[in-house]
Length: 511
Image (cartoon, rainbow, N blue to C red):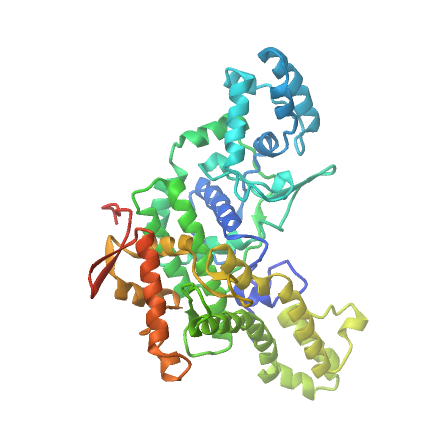
């Protein structure tokens, strides 16, 4: 079994199995929003080095992100501001009271001096109003994450910074919420066929925009703060993949909409989540050598249980099981290699098998006598067991967690999770895929061909031919989608036989 390129030089986890299949790494606790924020951190850092969305060599990404700790302290570690603001003091007295309190409680700063703010805001009230506004824009603002893991909306480049852990001993990179999924996203887009086109749009629409709100962030932050060391170690096993190309195409379509960048970003987040789910499932299918493309039977929620609902739940469960099945297949394929057969036929099959497993999967620890002992079959089964346990902790949860977060799945009115797109996801699909207008039946075909979404009877032909459903079941499902889109102002019916899905935003003339 050939090791993936870049494997020899890497340093990382105690096993190299999930990472070898999907990259280092997909992580369920890093939401689509946080994935985009990490991506933007990488993009901004690489753009400063004039190599945005460009890989000189595969899997050698190394970048130095911003930390912006003064900004984070002011927005998310500033409990005294409200108390001081509510006090019956003069403006001068409020500054005099707040500044030493802030300096005393700020974290991660060698010299926590915030006196520069007095020159940037006319009054303490003005300063507090800006802080309050930016706090309200926080991504996932209702979470109970620590203050150093909270993020302001990416209004501009000053708002971009990495996740860190701040303790009494200092500031350290934390991979819990910025778990490298954003780095995987960056590498995907680097390797897409439309990387150059996307780079131009990201540069024009995000990196070089002089946004007023970003100016407020710059006023609070002061001088930009950078991480002390470069961040390296990102890995993506595929030099190219159809998912990378479709992802870039959808980003370009959204960025070409005639809407402000901060309105386009939520749509980008949603489509990114969908594509990363599809990437995980498609890579799983490739490992399993499944000939059929990934499909997702989507129920457009009906008031009562239906055949489509059951098929959708079955589809969800089947897809949810694919990554673990791929993991186990990936490991067990080693038994068909000449190296494994040679180990079995050697004078010391156990130690030789252990050495081969370590060389291929970084397990077992050859210095651990207890872990590395056993017959080849026993070692292989123990590796599978441990790999499955590790997989279930994070990578195995990505499909279910992200499908819920982007509005692709639901348990509403049912005990089983199934694919049931929300209005938010449906609107994003329309603004991303429809250039001005598209016949409804062609829209259903597009969703199926591009994303594997099964909604209408034509797309569900395999289920109908197999007797799992009647044509009427999926025709009714499509009719409910038509009604939903019409209620959202995204569809107009011109006659009984002609309905058009309409993009509410006119695309720019630029290509």
